[in-house]
Image 1 (tube, one colour):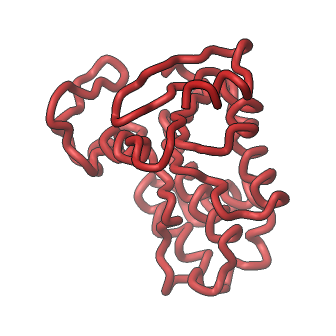
Image 2 (cartoon, one colour):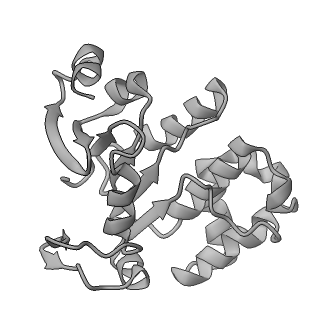
Image 3 (cartoon, one colour):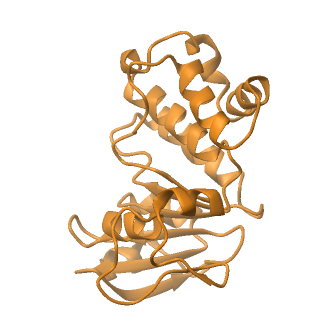
Length: 205
């Protein structure tokens, strides 16, 4: 994955997309092979060490701190990357202004779309070099899904590389610089922009 690219992992349920993301993030250790990030072998480093290197993951489960307010969720992450509270709030609200009226709400009272906006803002707060997203628009309304993808689209060409596990083929075709088709844990086809088409993705999945 090159700097600033948006790359998709596409495959059926159980193909290994989420497993690969969690392996890159350090939550699963590979049985064979190795993981190299910015020229360094990180296969045996912890998730915390990888986070400090600039690898950030937003899980499909929208992992946030449910008993904390939106504001406090943002502050927890800000402490980890050395941002003061005002800087962190400003950055999160720049990404998703919709969160401003929700700052004092407990996270467990948010809708699915609001939780995903919070989770993504938290994942992006520390300026990651590699952002891992696991089906970020699954189960969301068209309007909210569009907002999520607009934020991701704006990072194209920046220093943030994005790797997304996704099954929404129109979204993949719209955003991808490259697509890796996965079957049974193996990459079986690579598609490159600008020749990525809906028909090609469907054919190889």
